[in-house]
Length: 411
Image (cartoon, rainbow, N blue to C red; front, side, top):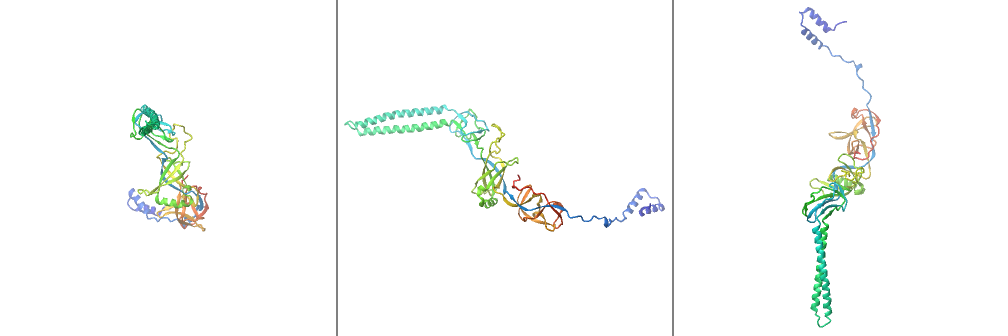
């Protein structure tokens, strides 16, 4: 087998020149090899251009969409009552369980009663005394009037007797008012719940003296229904007003709630109040709705968190239109974006790809609604997007249907 020319030169040189060291010989071989021309792949070995890439598309069409806006809101109790003492007395009993639900009329605190019972009895005795004096005054008046028919009778005596009678009648009315006041104060020694709700912890324990200035003894918050309040930026509030004005106002909007754990709360609420003024510090308008808060069926009295909604917690509020509308909806994966905004790839009748700039409406992880830039009937690329560019030829085929468009809450 013939040796390459480089090796033959090296061998020939080695036969006529003084013996080279092994390192010098290796350097000569390396230097000679770098002078070899690079091999050129024949044209017949190049890869030919392949067929147009295969892509999948969907036809843009209008789909029923429930208009939804998301806001951060807070759950609030419809009724909140601070329990305070109405009289000064020693606390004798607190028969309620802290943190439990109570009914209207349930006894919460019992104060000492004897001093107030004694005052009631004293006022009753005063009334009895004045009634006896009144009876005597009436008899005196009758005698004085009878004497007027005789020479011994005098009109002044009649007038004096009538005045005394009327004075006793007035004193009886005053004593009756004092009796009523003392009876009310006696009733205040038993403090009952004015509403159904969940009671907090007590601020005063048995044995302490409470007064009307002692402050709040405990707080009760109602449980069902609940309020959900949420601020809406004023520009968005104006858009909502113009959109729902001709659709029934409050009746055309429903409220859904996403709980802090990410779960969508089942019962729906209704919008019932819009603040008449814009908050100057935040440029927002406060909206409020009512939403049911029933007892969880798997719980029993005494369990914690018997109801899913808790006063004061933060939730995500979904403001939904009661009636769906028709809008162009495409898979969210088909939407691309760059510094100029969002766009999609569309396949033309000649199987050429073009780029269309679009304006997005409501979006979910699965769907996006398009408010501008796309026409009904356009073939939007959803599969094989990474293999195409504008102006490229493709081999299109219909892709599986996009997920059903229900609403923008990502249910």
